[in-house]
Image (cartoon, rainbow, N blue to C red; front, side, top):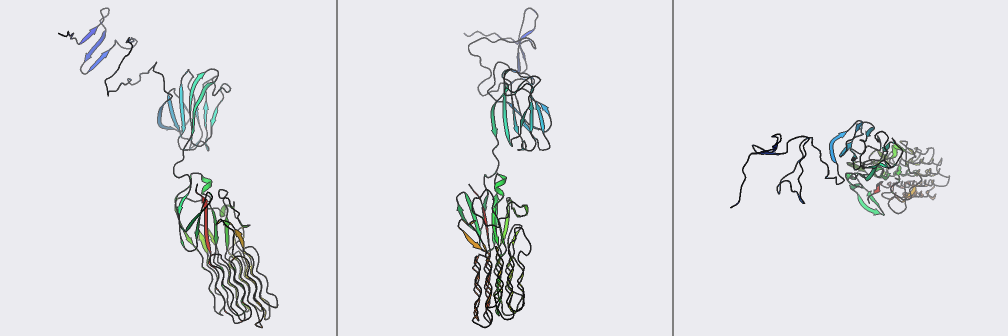
Length: 464
């Protein structure tokens, strides 16, 4: 038969203080503060399987050691404070710099910090040791300044020689995508770059911006539609306005009209949708003058103006991205870079040849249209070449002026960049090439005009 001892309390003989006391559902072992309990044995088990062993509120533990962890305080620190051994802190420096004073060091003491909202780079955290102590073996009382965005550090106190030693460091993992994620247009790749080409209207939809802010500054090409032309010794159509920026994150050979890094020219993407407008070429106009300008192409705040129309007879060429050439007799070429941008988006058109010569050449992105010689039409101004689409293409050339009277006089040559040649004699001018912004060639005497080439929008960015 198993023996049993049944008691509620066990008390000391000497002073009748409790050794074991049963009170309701609680059993207390030990006589109270200042009286340690020693349990001797090769193995001591506290708590039942599945239960919890907890320290009373305000109690401390010794002898268990630490596993390199801290108790994280989840209320961010926004002002100067003194750290406590065994605690970790999220430090928020959004509103200004913060100083943390370390506790007095004792071997094995541990403190951790973490940048709360990625602002240590703008407002630093200064860590100051207790009086006379060191951090990482530096000079006594020497501060440690943390100015790396998102950094976290754990410190352990070793000894008086090195003081607080950094044993763990990390930099944060940025939220969201590492690179731009977007759709729209015809998408191709070149190396680590993705290229979106729009040959008609559409939407460039950005679902995620890049984690690295610099990579959200994208490369782009925006070319307006080229100017159309008339009959009757018409000037050549002006090339569409040419706008380009090459971001440092996308390596390729840009044109000499690269607008980076001018602030008005830079586009920094955010996660939103950007409507894309691709300008149409100006129409092939009938003998009535003052018609046929190209229309603008637009990406975000960047506008490539339409090229000015090449005009007929004594009418001056029309202003535009590049100006249209004047008709024969007494007109002057249209103004380019209208409205003005920097770098200039285009050049002026050429003058016609009075009294019965040909039309002036249309202006191109890179050079002005030529004035008409007495025996024919003026040559169109040259466009510019870029490799933004991964191969060299020339855009925004000016059209050649139409030939004058008598009918055998030649038309002007097209400028490079998709422009059309001027029509000789009674022939029509040639149309500008689609999606180059090339100006049309002017029509000769009683020869028809031609349509300018449509524009284009290209966006390029790093995607891997």
